Length: 168
Image (cartoon, rainbow, N blue to C red; front, side, top):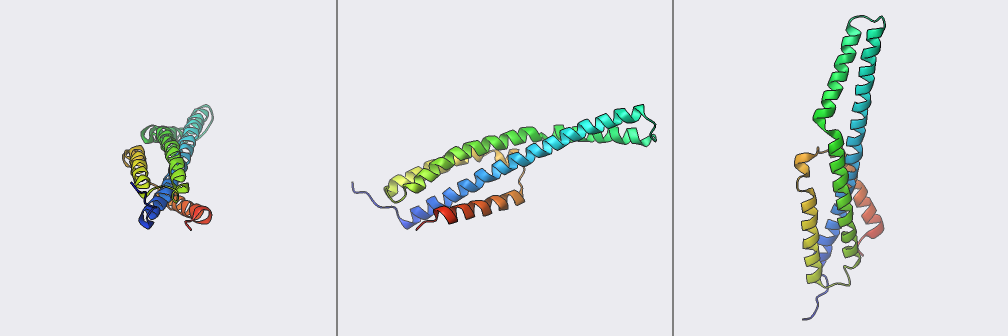
């Protein structure tokens, strides 16, 4: 059976998926960093407010100061537990790691796009799309959406791929 060179449509589809894969990888990496930071701030805030509440009990402060410090500690603890920021940060980091593995396969496919048969490229494209979808299928239900991180990730991925790996 004769081989068929990659069509423009196949090349375009692979290009779009390569850039999109990079965008998603960047997004989940940034989201993991943000959620981890929020978790750390809340943990430090909880410890600080709790320590402050204890110190105010031992010192001479107006009555409302210990109550406010205790309330702040309780609120920060509640937000930390309910928000599950550390769990979400770990989930985001795991998605980022898995997307990075798929991203390597996308880059390999892109580098071979002119040397491989169109049918083979399309089969590989479909397989990678399925792998990627399986990785992120639960993410919209488990993780918050940050439009600012999404825009940043899109800009960076577009710039990276356009400057360094644009199709000829």
